[in-house]
Amino acid sequence: MKRPKLKKASKRMTCHKRYKIQKKVREHHRKLRREAKKRGHKKPRKDPGVPNSAPFKEALLREAELRKQQLEELKQQQKLDRQKEQEKKRKLETNPVGEPSDVEPVEELEQCKSKKAKLSKQHPKKLYCQELKKVIEASDVLLEVLDARDPLGCRCPQVEDAIVQSGHKKLVLVLNKSDLIPRENLESWLNYLKKELPTVVFKASTYLKDKGKITKMKKKAVPLKHKVCFGKECLLKLLGGFQETYGRAIHVGVIGFPNVGKSSIINSLKKERICNVGVSMGLTRNMQIVPLDKQITIIDSPSLIVSPLNSLTALALRSPASIETVKPMEAASAILSQADARQVVLHYTVPDYKNSLELFTKLAQRRGLHQKGGSPNVERAAKLLWSEWTGASLSYYCHPPTSWTPPHFNESIVAGMKRGLNLEELEKSNAHSIEAIRGPRLAKSILFQSSGLTNGVIEEKDIPEELPRQRERKQEEGKDNEDMEKISDMPPIEEKREPPPPEESTAGESASSLNLDKMTQEDDAYDFSTDYV
Image 1 (cartoon, helix red, strand yellow):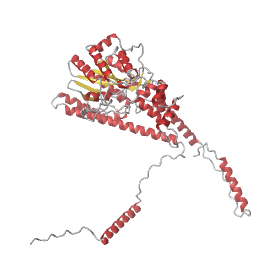
Image 2: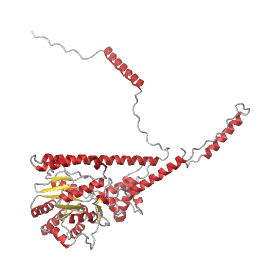
Image 3: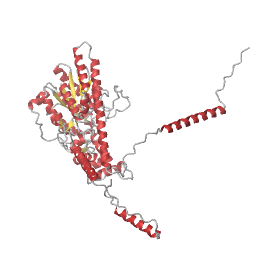
Image 4: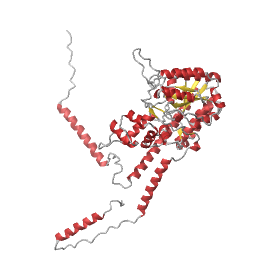
C-alpha cells in the first residue's frame, strides 16, 4: 500500500498575527521619530537663492558665476593632468623592460607628479600652446585641416611660419567638409591652394561605431551621404610617398582651428572612433597618438588658439565657447554681417529683415522658441544660428582672392614642400574625389565674405592674461563695490519718532484720525529709488 502524500503546511498567517506585526512596526517607527526629535536632527534645507528684494543682487550673482567658472577650470585642468599621467603609464607598459629608454619615462612621471600643483594653476590656453609645440616638434609631416567653406579663414600664418622655421618638415593642406560647398567653388579653391602647398580634397565620415570597424552595407540599401568618406586613398598615398622619401617610420601631426574636423579625419583613416568627435568646439584638449600602421603614426593635437585681436566674425567662427567668452547675440550678428541677406532669408524661410535683432525674433517665432509669457526667445535663436554656422550641416561658401601670396612663403620653400611628390597622380585623385562628392547647388548655399587669414597664438608670452570682456566685467564689479562702500560709509538714518499721545484723552476719534494722517505723510515721503541698509 502506497504511503499517502502529506500536504505542505500553508504559509498564510492569521489576521490577528499580521495586525500585531503591523502594530509593532508602527510603534517602532514612532519611537525612532521621538528619539530623532529629541536629538534635534533636521533635514538640510535647500538653498533658497538670492531674493529679488535683496540689494545688489546682480553683483552677488556675478560673483557666484565667477566662482563657478573657476571651479570648472580647475576640474578640467585636473582631468588633463590625470590623462597625461595615464598616457605615460601606458607608454611604460608598452616599452620592453630591458631597454634603457624605460628610465626616462619614469623620471618624467616623477617630475609630472611634483609639478602637478603648478600645472593646475596654469592658464588652459598656455597648456594648449605647450601641446601644439610638442606636436610640431614630434611630427615629420603636418596636415593643416581647413574648412572648405572658408579655407582662407582657417589658415594661421603664425603656425605655418613656425613649421617652415622648425626645419625640414612637410606641410599639407586638407580641404575637409568638401560636400558643403558647390563643385565650381571647390575646384577654384583647389586651383588657388595647390600653387602654394600640396592640397588634398577630403570628406570625413561621421557615421562610425565606438572602437569597432565600420559595418558592411547591405546590397539593397543605398549608402547615405554622411556615411561615405572621400579622399582617404589620396591622403594615404601621399603619406606613403612621404614615408618612402624619409626611408623610416614617420609621425604625422594634425593641426587646425576648432571644429574643422581634425579628429573626424583621423577616425576616417583608422576606420574607428578613437578620437572624441562632437558638435561642441574644442573637444580635443591634449595630444593623442594613434598608430595608423607600422610605418605611419598620427598625432591628434588640440585646436589652435585664436588671437583676441581678430575680427568679431573670426572669433565667432573659430573660437570655442569654452575658451573665448563671446556672447551669442554679438557672434551671430557678426556672422550675419558677412553673409548675403537674400540667401539667408531663403534658407531660414523668414521675411526680409532690417537688422540682426529682427531676424532673431522672426527666427524664434518660426522655430517656436518662446519665453514665459509668449515673447520670442531672441538669445536662444541667436545661439541656434551660431551653432549651425560653426557646425557641419550648413552650406555656405566664399570666393578665393584674385591675387595673394603669403609673406612667409617664397619659391624655394614651395618647391621644398612639393619635392618628391607625384603631383600628377595627386591631381587625378583630387579630380576623382571632386566628381564623387555631391555638393549643393549655388542657389541652395549662402555666399559668405571671408575676413581673411586668422591670427593665432603660439607663444605663451603672447597670451593675454585678461581679455577685454573680462576687464569690462571687472570694471563693472569695481563700480558696484565702490557703490557698496559709499553706502556703508554713510551715517545711519535716524528715525524721527513723535511723542506718544497722552493716556487720558477726551477725544479718541480725533487722535486716531491725526495718527492716520501722519502715517500717510510718512509713506509719501519714502523714496523708492534709494536702497536703505
